[in-house]
Length: 451
Ligand SMILES: Cc1cc2nc3c(=O)[nH]c(=O)nc-3n(C[C@H](O)[C@H](O)[C@H](O)COP(=O)(O)OP(=O)(O)OC[C@H]3O[C@@H](n4cnc5c(N)ncnc54)[C@H](O)[C@@H]3O)c2cc1C
Image 1: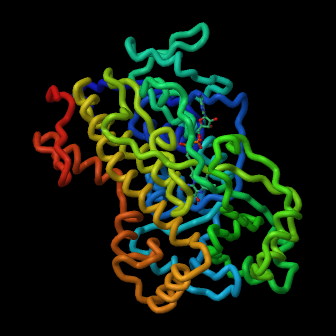
Image 2 (image 1 turned 120 degrees about the horizontal axis):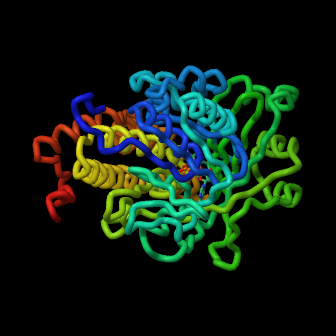
Image 3 (image 1 turned 180 degrees about the horizontal axis):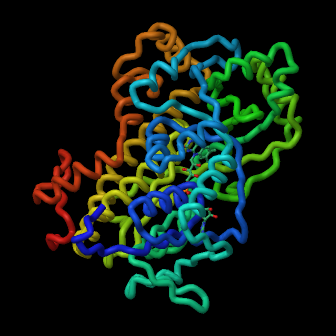
């Protein structure tokens, strides 16, 4: 934060998108004393979705805006992650989440998206953030030349605009200057099944899944099932094969014929089949390949007025439970860096540092996510048998290269140990010294040096 003697080049930030990343960004900017407006296309506050995992690196950001205790009240802290065979139910891997997360100063939690969104929303209003509903920004509204947003009947002026408008971002489209992205099917859908905790507790064979509170990943053939308890609800998420044909693409969630689906699960563990018998209405979402942006795809415009954060910049897949965590980290680093700037050229450099640092980390995380997905979704056969053998043999002694990346001590430290404030302080100090740390293999210079 700039001192009183230093002029501040930023006073008003406009955030496009009132999703989880837009709202946390608003709180982070408020914390640095900036005025914040959020534009959200939905006409009213809308809370959708089922469960979400938040890992220590995401919770560190919630801690920084003092929301952690409130979030924790509605969350479950799964003590273990169990990797199980979809056929036999054998536990192939048991990770002690409580012990593993201790060193990161925050646990790994699961909660309903609606609770998270409600908490962020209420806090944003309490902190004086202006949230305007029913404002859908179109790519053509983004006036890059004049650094303003041209909404119908209004020119909205801010010192910085943050595009937190998700995977189909209008701000991204304007920045990149191409038409809407053509999503590439990932060949999977996610089916979300919600069962009440009461129903789970009433079934003798299912009771322990709710009572233990563990997170279970059932390793299936070309698929996986993740089950965990939320506040009163048991969440079952199937990642299931789907056509890659463009003709079979769908964007809005679709209903699933659950009876037909259930009948196709020949040889599956009876517990999973019983869970499926407890539900009737199931929706599925199509998943798309993540994109990893290089230098040629800008996240910041030439005038340093528009910047992307969250899924608009680095949409991923859910196999490591890190999508939103990456968005939170980005929001925290962005707010911390630009708040250090005391001149417009420094804002430009802060944004350049942000873009480079986030591209570096999120591209590695997306690659790791894809690897984890391949590991948990192997077709039955020799490779799957070798994987299961390796899991059994190394159980309890995870080392570097451990097949379950969440247990790999080195990867884990990199993933969960990230501290945006520290990263921003270090990067800014190096910048001020005029010798930004350049990662090996990269030759990059801040934009203000005329490169
Ligand atoms: C199946 C699945 C499971 C997942 N599980 C996890 C998990 O366990 N843990 C985790 O960390 N991540 C998880 N993720 C990822 C996580 O959901 C996303 O990373 C996160 O929602 C991104 O937040 P966001 O705010 O960037 O975008 P969004 O959540 O998409 O929010 C964007 C907001 O912007 C608004 N908007 C869009 N366009 C406009 C516009 N033009 N003008 C104005 N407003 C606009 C939208 O209405 C919305 O409110 C999962 C994702 C999937 C698909």
